Image (cartoon, rainbow, N blue to C red; front, side, top):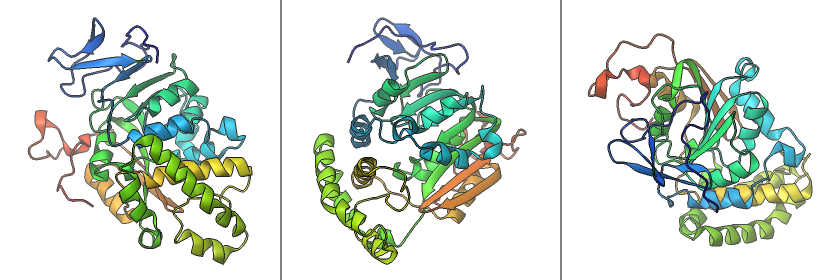
Amino acid sequence: METSPISISNHSTFPVWHCPTHHHPLAVDNDSVRCPEGESYFEKGGILRFVPESSYADAFGAQWNRYRLTQLDSYTGTTISRDRARRALGEELWSDLSGKQVLECGCGAGRFTEVLLQQGALVTSIDLSSAVDANQRNFPQNSTHRVAQANILQLPFLPQQFDVVFCLGVVWNTPCPEETIAALYAQVKPGGVLVFDQFRPTLSQFTKTSTLLRLILRRLPPRMGIMVTEAITRCLLPLHKLTRNFRLGQMLLSRISPVLSYYHAFPQLSDELLRQWAELDTHNSLTAWYYHCRTPSQIRRSLKQLGLCEISLQTTGVNVEARGRRPVTPAKTMNPGSPRGMTASDGRFDTDGRSV
């Protein structure tokens, strides 16, 4: 991959990059980007990297580079990704994204990057994995879009820099959903909005073969993991196609099969696209290190503890889509032990430390 000259400005309209450890502005020093405290970060392929090259998300990086186009509306000729983003954001926010600073966490190859940019948002896309390379190939950085490889739990910005923090398809596969949600919320401006989703518990968790397969496949090297999950999908997908018009058979098969198919959900897709979607999401499911589910009541309780207002939850299939706003006037209650006088409304801490 080519290495381009280091630039940390990107565009004056974006929030400035800061050291994710010490929160100082960064400066270019020879072939790296440095913090005054000594932390050093590098740029590769025109993308700033704030994390080690390898992590628990390596399989996702391989996945999104393999299926770089699969879920883009511009590739499928549908509005599947657009409709999902619009529903999660809500009509009021959806129609008011133009010029808004949007932090897109867990950007993958950019299925939602595409629709956010189409709505006129100024998008900062981050991902823990090498999926950022696929994202940049699909949507090159410019005055309205920039990309970085970073960890949600150590984001390279000062707190409360974004009008919207947007995170779909990510929270469930992070080590601790509550910590992830708090870190996302920390980046929301007063009056801004947090949007994310989370899997909810279902019977399939206890009947699918996915749970056992995941314990094995997540340990494979990324390329081998893709080969194995593609083989599993191509073996079992014909059964899903055979039962697509037989509701009872489809339901029974989905309770056991590790393959995620969309014959019933997205009949507008061609057989080739349905195969690609099945391979992609089956790999995503079977190679994830973490698979945390939460009920709507647990999610609502977490958001209330963080101090969000105007909380909205909606259940769509196995997903719970959540949205909430940071109050313009911060809460006055101090969080015990919080550094630098931080209040509970800053969204960095779960006040009772429980997994809720």
